[in-house]
Length: 85
Image (tube, rainbow, N blue to C red; front, side):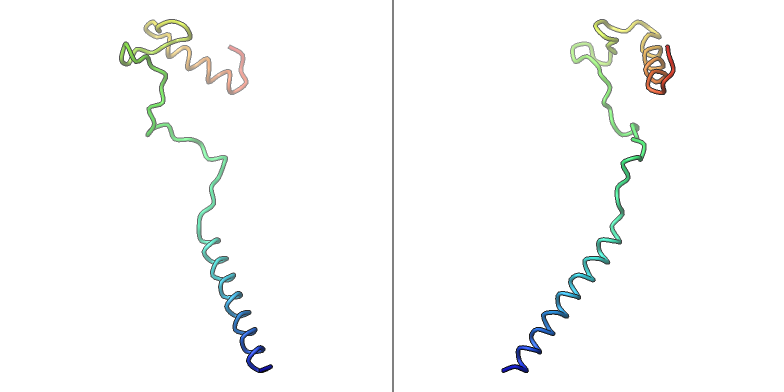
């Protein structure tokens, strides 16, 4: 009876060790995500546009005049970089 317990405990230990090693290999092969990766906006259309007027851009509380949207985006980019506008 003692031999059976020793053999089964060794078998259980070997099985647990094999599972842990297999999980560590799988875990190390999966690429980790990087929170500092710059977002790619090419595939998203997350622009703030009005529904009633199609693709008319909204600048604050009014419809953008020609060129105003570009100026707004440049000012926003400069402010986010820390430059005063």
